[in-house]
Image (cartoon, rainbow, N blue to C red):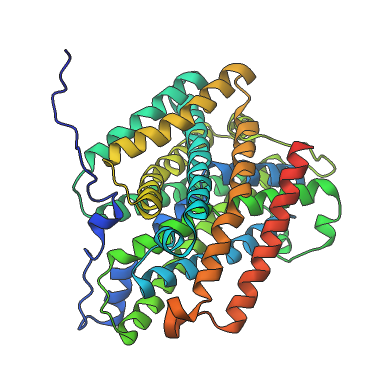
Length: 442
């Protein structure tokens, strides 16, 4: 029998298992404020990865190529809504010392808890499908392989999880920061090549009802909204904030919430800049006045080189797409462990968790590219966002409901205006997502 040259882990280990890394990052009370900010920086970055994954790329490229800069304000408003929801998730984890998945198991009947767990798992698989497709497209561009071979290569990211076994959580945060900066540098360099109309960019930031007056831009705007707020991120954030050591008193928790809020807002604003850059890049490179042709992500990288006038533009596009997909390897693994441990009280080795999730995403990805052809990536990415949209209300509802209960949150319960704003977002996002799903199936 074939024997591996190394022994595979048989238990869940740091840094991907939430219970193994809880309370591992100390924050000395005597540190100055700026040092405390740096100590608390990190969880927001992990969450922000979900807001710049290949699924966001697909909707932003379509929006920019078809409608120019008109839908830029939708990216901004969607990101602001995401900040509100992620701050609720962060506060739940810090105040109670339990993540959203644990609360769902404890506060709802078993049947409801199992149903919520099922929806959460579907959202992780749908997000991983987008990562597989994005990385496969990047491998095709950078290595010259076919799309099915690119899909197969994405299975190797389980080795990354194995390589980081037993490492500290701050190392994962540092790697994710490096990948995010790679995406940002590549995109901002490409903007220099394509020379956007910055006056038109400024105009696109202004909310406009007329820009959404017809079915096509409204459909795409809702797609951008659905691709922005990730369901599993609401579970993930409430867990990873517990990696910081916080004393069990109101003053310490209040300070932790304030510092974590800074981390969350700054990280998601960085994600907003990256998402906005993708749409601006597509608008500057591919949109022509009077032409509302929809451009898929698999066409974008081929057309970018002649538009920008340099082969470097297409290579930078591929590197940014690869970094975007690979950074989600870390967050997807951690989110999967959070959801499984929280809902089911079950822990398995992190490489097994990653292999299961990636395996479930590889099958539809491979079937899609083999049956629909090399140009199937854009369609499959949009489909993954529709699936994510269907799961979002099932994560939002318990989050808003739980953080509005004084019995759970004590003095940190939502203010009345926070509750009102959160439920308004729930209604708007749920209605928009329902409309998007109906239109997709219609």
